[in-house]
Amino acid sequence: MKQRAFTLMELMIVIVIIGILSAVGMVMFGGQAEKAKIAAVKTNFKMVKKYVSVELMKCQMGDEYIFLNSGRYKISCSAVDQAGRTGSAAAFDSQFKKIFNPMDTIWGKDTPILRHDGRPSDPIDDGSIGFIFYSFPSWPGALRSCFATPCSSSDNVLTATINYQ
Image 1: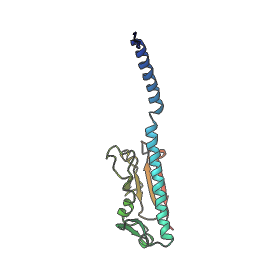
Image 2: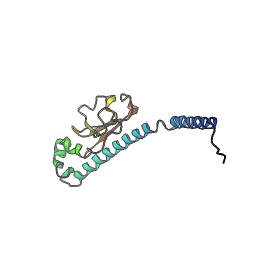
Image 3: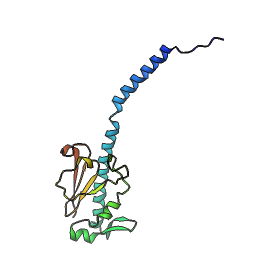
Image 4: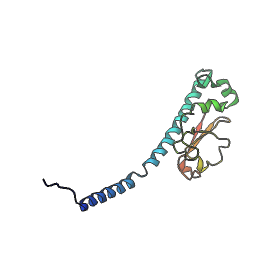
């Protein structure tokens, strides 16, 4: 019985073709992971903005507390009205502690997205890409996030103004 097999030349041609196809695929799909991370940062930013707006609307509709988290953290609506601030940062941060920064390469993958922004006028550091910075010292409050470097470019920064009343 005669056995037939591929020649060495045929196997080499197949390997070269697979190499060419994989190189073309890397060029075409190589940037998709970065685009997905940018989309995740933008989606997280919109979600935080909507959540804060809805929670503040609860105060206007007569609720006593907002940003409730299993009773451990909460903010009194009267404190929001009188002080012009959301009160405890812990109550706000606790709502998003399980949503992680998709671009965080410095701190690790389990770093929550929220950061308190003491000085909203300062530029966002390039090492803080993907985090959402919030500042509510008075109304209107501010949200900011950088989704691409350089963060000093306004084209790479998302900003939102949160108003109350």
